[in-house]
Length: 102
Image 1 (cartoon, rainbow, N blue to C red):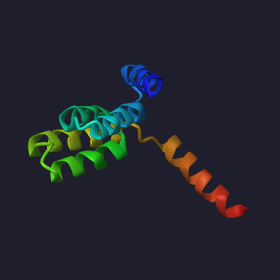
Image 2: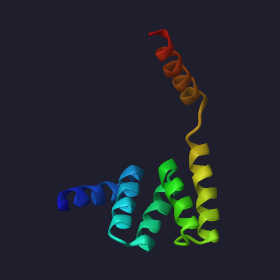
Image 3: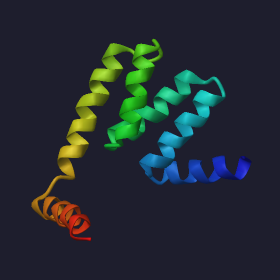
Image 4: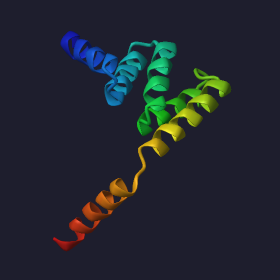
């Protein structure tokens, strides 16, 4: 498991939100809820949806404060909005319709 964690850390440092979320999940398994919350906050700030769901669960469990959750939710929405474009929407529509033709 050491190599997996090492590579997840390297990817997270490079800005990969899924790796950051995976590190948060590993921290939850190890019983480090506070550290996991920090990983989830960073990934959610990059627009990662699963991290936002994990933060909601952490809020319900009392590991994330209401202020942290609100700030992260605003940053998450801003990150998601920043990635929206007409070209991306057209590409998503194309691939949705592509599956219907087969």
